[in-house]
Structures are given as structure tokens and as C-alpha cells.
Length: 328
Image (tube, rainbow, N blue to C red):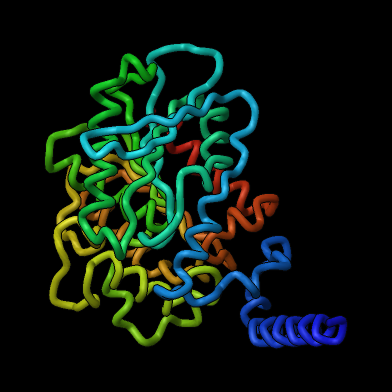
């Protein structure tokens, strides 16, 4: 038994060493303060077979921290679970933020992002509402977007109960949450629902990126081209194609963005979503939408979570709060 254990340990060590050597060149492009020891090992390929394990990991709750109260509510006819995070001081008529979790449209949870949500509530004194929306591939588009819109409608209808000023609501999200936030902003505009601002943190917004072969070395960490294909195929219920996608499914496809709420778009130049995010920010500006674009050299997907103490990542997060403070 001891020999088997020793062999297993040596095998695992060899695999880890091989993985580290494979990723060494990619790591060299990352600034020293944004490197994390686990970085070479968090870029596995997600499939239908291992998706349940990834989902289990993404439902671990992170601490919201002091000064906030977190309650679970159920919204709409389908009883969508949402987490409502509120400052403990009990003041009313605060700004509200529809905060949408990431996870490639296939995994993730509000409780996994509770740490960041709690920090936002403390920093800005807002009330956040975070839907545990339905995930693909079991629930392809438009299930997730419908759940987010239902949650937004609920926020507005129950604003007084929640202590929210219904005239001061913003939407935000990271990765797939950023894609859903962009879609919520578009659909809300079309349905006449006013939003004060949108925050898109390295948003996943263009299914056509799956069709490209050359990613200029981007997407080596956390969210890879293979995972992007699996995520988009799951969300659309079919393989992406250049010709079309359902309205709101891939927000980057929309040509006229006139009238959308002021936007903050942030992405790193090592992120697989770099090109689509920069293009979307430029399109927002061309449509007359106030838009702040922040690009960070050496930043990979999710770096603000893996290297939160890096100066550039602190500035990155500060940009989010400054944008919301300005417009809320």
C-alpha cells in the first residue's frame, strides 16, 4: 500500500512538473505580481463528463465579510434563487445593482462570488441582487437571460421592500456574467426599462471568436479556446456559426448600440476575450454611448481574483467602483 501511495505521489508530481514546464513560456508574459502558484493548473478542459465536478467547485461559498447582510429569496413564477446583499445600517432608497455571476454560461453561482459582492456593497453602500440563473447545456439560451430579466423586474417591483431606489439601478457581471449584463442592457433598452450604468468585466460576448484559429497566444489561462467552444455550443444549443445567432445571445453582434447606459469595459491583453471586448467598447463609443475601456498589460482571464493584491488589479477593481459611483 505504501509503495502504491508513493507511486501515485510521484506520478502526480511528474504530471504537475510537466504541466508547469508546458506553461512556463505563457507564465513569462505575466507580470510577477500577477503570478499565482496555482495558475498553471487551473486551465483544464471542461467537458460534459467533468462538468458536474467543475460545477460542484463553483458552488463553494466565499465569505461576504462584515458590514453586510445576505438573504436568499425566490423570484418569479419559476422561483429563481437570488442572493440579496445589503449594508447593515438599514438606510433606504439606495442604488441597486443586478450582479450576474460568471462561469462560461455553464457553471458558477452567486455564492462563489459573494466575497466580491460583499466588498462592492461595503464600498458603495448599494444593494446587490444576484440571480442563480439556469445553466447550459441543460438550459440553453434564452433561459439565463430570461432569469436575469425576471430578477431585474422583481428588483423594480419590490424596490421599496429591498431599500432600492428604482431610478438608480445598474447591471454588472464578469465573463459570462458580463455577457449577460451586456444582453440585459440591450434588452432593457429595447423594452423601455431604464438602467443607470453597465459594468462589463472581461465579458464573454461574441460566439464568432470560436470560429477563429489564431488567438495570438491569448487564452492560455483559466478560460481557453476549447472551453470557449464548449461554453458557446452549450449556451446556443448548437455549434456557433458566422451567419447568425439569436438576438441578445451574443451581444457583440448587435450593430446599433445607441441609447445604451454608460459602460465600463475592462479586459487584459492576455485574455481570450480581449479582441471582442475592445471592439465592443469601440462600437459603444461610435454609437454615442459613454464608455470607459480599461485594458491591462499582462492580465489574464480572472486575474483580479487570483492576484487581488497586485497594484494593477486593485486599480482595475477601483475602476469598477468609480464608474458605478459616478452614475449611481
